[in-house]
Image (cartoon, rainbow, N blue to C red; front, side, top):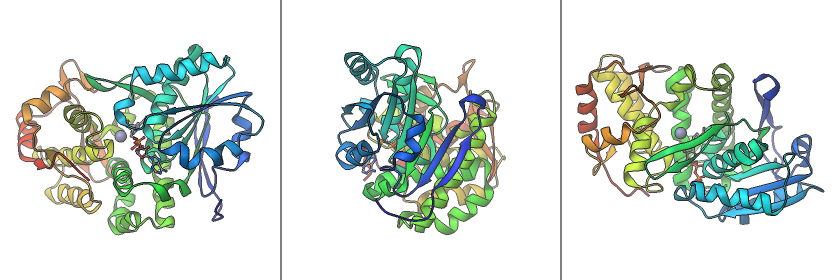
Length: 370
Ligand SMILES: NC(=O)c1ccc[n+]([C@@H]2O[C@H](COP(=O)([O-])OP(=O)(O)OC[C@H]3O[C@@H](n4cnc5c(N)ncnc54)[C@H](O)[C@@H]3O)[C@@H](O)[C@H]2O)c1
Ligand SMILES: [Zn+2]
């Protein structure tokens, strides 16, 4: 265990379902934060990559509980109902009751599946998020959106179910591949774009420090991102209003993920390209200045993320894929567009011709990223 600066504690304020987000170094092996949230029976869900790295430290922090472990195969393509059912089977086989706790140790895929299993098992049991990717530490572990994919659409089967605790041990990022680190930066940039212009400016100056894994820069970016996410979720848990802004780039991104096949582009990569498309469209419609659209695309590019659609996804295919996304209302594709850096809005009132022009003009990224 590394020692370092004290951990940061934030809160997601949701009345009696409020919960803390702890961010810091060496949290994984510390029984302190986990203890108040654990019951007699704990099922740890991890995957074949993360388990061998971190299960042992975590296990030591679980004390005297009855601990069962499910190790899933690694990959977005396994974020399915069939995988979720494996977790349910393990719970039943071990005779876990409604007082049990699930614990997700891994990235957003493990977190989303585990959260959904917790939402469904005996109509809902507690769970804890222990995110180990940058993307999961800044986004997916906070806010209670849980889901699995369907072949026809991303995250199409899911539930809102808040965790009891989010424990983000930043030491785990040391083993994260560079490509996954960059994918997490995409969601970090998103917060700057939709509601935090000051943070966007900080990112323009510090994105290289993040890419170099400077611990202070990473800790700042994780804290600021979680603070933004916690505020949005506390104000609009069920996405009746402002939470939808967190979907900036995602309707394009989900279409890319589904169109290329899950696991081909990473979620963060698809969202990065999607944010550039949203900026391009916003500028075409006269919402966003050309200069701010360029700043957006430049920052995404500096972060080593794709700024264009994969070349094999044409405008008609993209439109068809986008129409499956949850953000469609009464047949119109609702999009998050940018008014300024730091201000976004949801709309379905835009010229469809401009959308087609964006889809046609921002093509050209290689299908295989590395
Ligand atoms: N629920 C939400 O609000 C929300 C928000 C954003 C994204 N998501 C979902 O999150 C998923 C993407 O999450 P992700 O980017 O974390 O992907 P992921 O879970 O697939 O993890 C990425 C890769 O990194 C590996 N890994 C994880 N931690 C590691 C570590 N510390 N060291 C080495 N390798 C490690 C994983 O095994 C995997 O191979 C998508 O399914 C997306 O839809 C959900
Ligand atoms: Zn996302």
